Length: 339
Image (cartoon, rainbow, N blue to C red; front, side, top):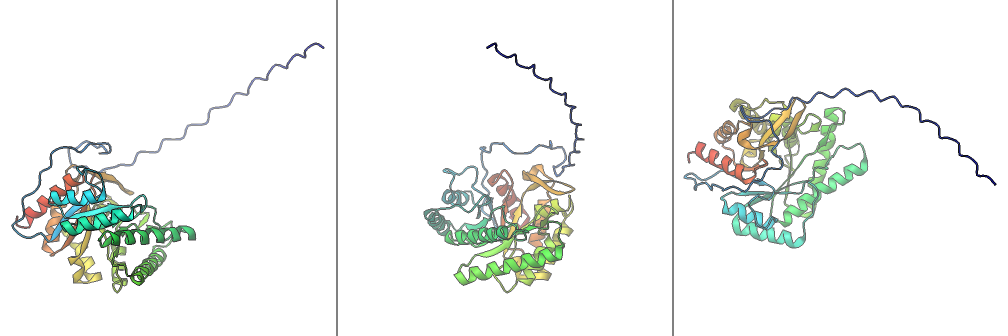
């Protein structure tokens, strides 16, 4: 039989090009010091010489260190980080569990041994994926577990302050969110106390208006939970970014410390858990971290305020430069504190 001719394919209908979406205007990101190119420091290599500061003439009341393993640490492990910070004359190591609490029992033992050997203070930052006010119950349960796991791991390492970002408003009433998160953190503190875990829960001030964690909320919570093992982490860079560039003068820093004292009592200024870095921000708040001296962060006036208010505690450097900027902070603080 003769082969049937195949029908010619129909010409494909011409599709009209989809209308181009109007490009979203770029956020007006700022926060750099005058004359510094507006560039993200991501991808930079930090392997230059480190200038260790001379021992202070007056005893330090505030200790400085890094959030994460210092660049110059070899090998790049938690126990080696503790010893490296001690070699540099720094006194705080914040273990970064931001992508999950993954640490072996033997590593915890090694960190505890390094802490006992050096006297370096150990804190921890919990996972970013915490939202104690999620609209989904399973996410609240997972968030509670992440906070508890952070505290338990930190206790095994010989540390004390577990910081974390508490949650998001999700367009709900801020008072409703506050009450719910405050109750959650109180319950978590009770669980840890029942377990005999000595680690303090330190909810952190956050850098965006969509996140629960303004200074006022964290201070209020500290007062409401003053009978539990709950403190706070004050990130002065986050406060600066959340306000789109305000809260960056001596008087404003003093006002923030006064607020904490009024809400939580005088003793709160003797055990402060502080985060600090340069920071880029827009009208919506935090964009990303910057190196300290490339930013507009007024850290010298902050240190003046801390000294004048008699603050004691730890400052964790979250700058991309880590130990390089931690040493700059320490040097500036010691100079202002009388050497």
